[in-house]
Length: 537
View: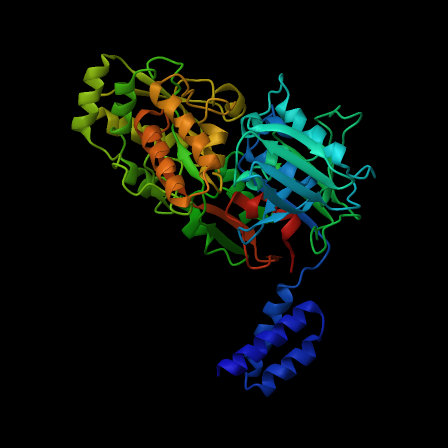
């Protein structure tokens, strides 16, 4: 039986690769004892897995703002991130199977205890304007983020870089102040999209020009982005649609109506409350991926009263986290414990105390804080589906501990520019990162623009930064684990982050769409590379 199954599987691969036609496959399956209806079904499934070119792919995303710009250094939500990955490339990428592979860099290797990294560039890659990618372009792009006056959200990821230089016509060498085994992951960060340079500088960071599978035709911030297939794309077997339209549809009901009515082919950030309903639509499939996405309630230490340790602890113990998972995610996720490290990541500290609802502890810390009066919590469903409801649940549970929370319903448009990373306490989401160093460097170390808790000036945060730096260059896995466990203890206890929930990625799409069978979990929407990786069956 297993031999026959293996034979049919091999024949199916030959069908998808074009070695044999449909008739030949069916005859082979019949000769192996497969019934005709089953053979026909297997043939259809195999053909659906074969990439086909053509069509307009329409996508509705739950992110976007009228303040969005093309400059990848300041990209701050999923809409602009989609625009980056659709039109551009990076030195490396996380594949649909979760493996880190070369992209514009064909290969990469470390030396000097991982303090030196050599990236070997692919030859002949062109920008959409016909310019060939050169080592000078790569250097100019990274220096753009590293510059003294840079406002790049990814600047903190490059603080350890002491020098970038080329060697020959296709090698780039990064020198770091210390070893970093995770550095190739870092250069895949979406902010580091490679743009054309001139005279060793990025002259127009808002250029639509990239090297990706699609060229950008129109960009209306917070509204839509339209793309056309790049006929000269260097990556074989990618970029199958003729055109792509990404629509920013912040209202979850409108987004779900769009996919159910056939106005779009794919919609992300589906509300867990409607999953059961949408599963009954015969033209749709629901896709759910467990990844590193988490929903947070960051408290900024530079805004009173969140500079008070006891007040922060009071709020951490005033939340019914499982209730949030049950009522907001409807079980499509797991409760958080105030560290941005999941079981899918290495070195999760399994001995951390559990931050769960404890009204006695919350009241005790609140009394020690000396605070009185309402505490404002800003929320909008632009942060995540159900964020306002989640804030109301937090207010209700805190009231049981004698803490008054005033929920401020914020406008969806401009939320990421006017509320997040500015107001004292708000709702937020993070797509997560594949390694602790990357996650910490993106949102928690003292040198990143996106330290949305402003956790910088306490004794614990100083030690945290030291530990993260030590762990980055530590090659002994036991010692590295000890360092990351300490970092998590410091962050959970003293930091301003309330990591409330780990949320699955949930999307709905037309049954006419197909993919390789593997879907990346590093970001939503197949690593936000859906336009490059999917096709119409």
